[in-house]
Image (cartoon, rainbow, N blue to C red; front, side, top):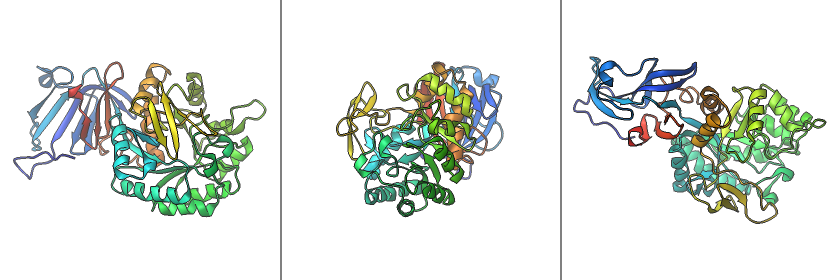
Length: 421
């Protein structure tokens, strides 16, 4: 983060006040609110916008340095965001790539490209998701990603595969899949050096329930996904410690009236948070609304499941060891036995938010919980981010009146400045 150069080294960090905007607070949206940022932290959130003296001569989106009000902290920058909405920075549990790059590359620069791409679309915290590969290759990727977690660039690692069902493999290479032997699960956790956040497992496979127990005991999220599991087997996995449904409805049997399958078990159990890909391709709006009604807005987490084409144009892209063709923003496997299968998404979370409140009929509060608060809680970072509260990191996203992204700050540093919109 660029440091403000003060003429008086002993002065406190520079303050920024965001005033006049609608602010999505945990208790609800505040009209004409005010957020005060000092350095990398939020130091105040108030139900009061611009003072009269601050309004004079200011239009929305303009800023100006002003003297602090006798508190000895130096200059305060006031940014008038009247007519705008400020929400917490988004938290993505499940993302593979973006900006033409992939986390599976195990190339640190390419991984940083992915991170930067999604940050500029409002995702200020994310877990890096891998794609099925040989155990040795996944362990190598984990070593690189672990360093990025330790540097504060990532919030953890999500292993999606290889312990998933060949009958529901989706965009994972079938010949590389394997049963979830707890010894192999332990190898990947060890390779992550304590930075593994989540692993997706098909619990009906041999070793599935034991692997779920191992993950739960290790403090790693056991996610049920890419599964052909029955209703009863899914319930057994939940009892064993599973707490997340990997992209609910996708890569699992549909809801049946005689064979309810995993969907019913995952929706009904209060211990489960369900991931949803809200891109208009993976889920019909009616299905998304069904999930919210059944699970409640405290148990839904929007994810991107994005691959390298997120933030990019149509074309050919790698996804782990496979090739993916993107047409009209939809990614599909281009060759092999799974050709034509949807291969992740090209979604960014600012688009997921806009779609939620303009098409899906969700309130801003519901969307914020799904995009920020709930995934932050799951990743164990809710003490630092996921809501706009004093003492937390200044991670926030600014939208205009049409819910178009115009600003992103991460730990107080503007990645997209609202005055440049």
